[in-house]
Length: 130
Image (cartoon, rainbow, N blue to C red):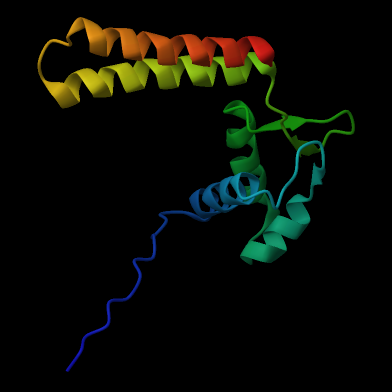
């Protein structure tokens, strides 16, 4: 008899945590678009909750820079700024270099260093084009 595995469903400890992850997923998937107003009432309906945990989750996402307040007092999805994109590339560069050094677990030879430096230079050129 073949046994089917059920997909693992993430359990959340609170409605606010569930709302936070739901809104975050809606942003990253593109369902909530940049500069469009976000309705806490609609999100509450989507999640079957009151507006309070939705607002708390939205405030947390605003503190993290994914949402921002608009002039009317509501929230919108924040637009990534050029500086944010550059910071992300710099962080990625640092993480990749660290990962490479851990992966090889030995000193890099000059040819490997040169290849990595060329990649870093290309990323820098891309940053300058932004």
